[in-house]
Image (cartoon, rainbow, N blue to C red; front, side, top):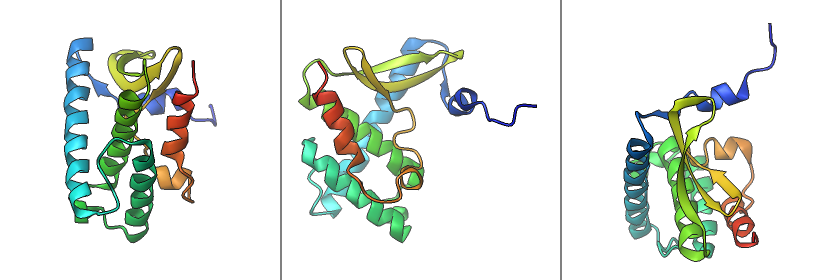
Length: 159
């Protein structure tokens, strides 16, 4: 009996199942659009968050996430915690793609199961897969630390 969980299998357990790459690309395209629409609505309610795809806006949306998480008030924005975390990933991706030359969205087949797909951003050989956004972000990083902005800078500083 293996006392260590199979991380790759558990990571892939919740990935979307699609018949082909086209279907997966369509699904993730629609999901990104829905997340961006939700964030646009949030920006109308939160003066500090400008929905302008600037690198600095990553700091504000992440700080907002921590505030909302601390107060357990995701429902104020008609979102679940998981939906907000997914939106964080989409917003980071959109900021990267709009501000960094040669960065782009990608949809890839999951290497352990050809019927599952994940979404991410890449620039050259550097990629960050974000099918779940920043899942359990507060649990992984209990204190605010500009994670999204740091991830943006990693892309910016790559050749």
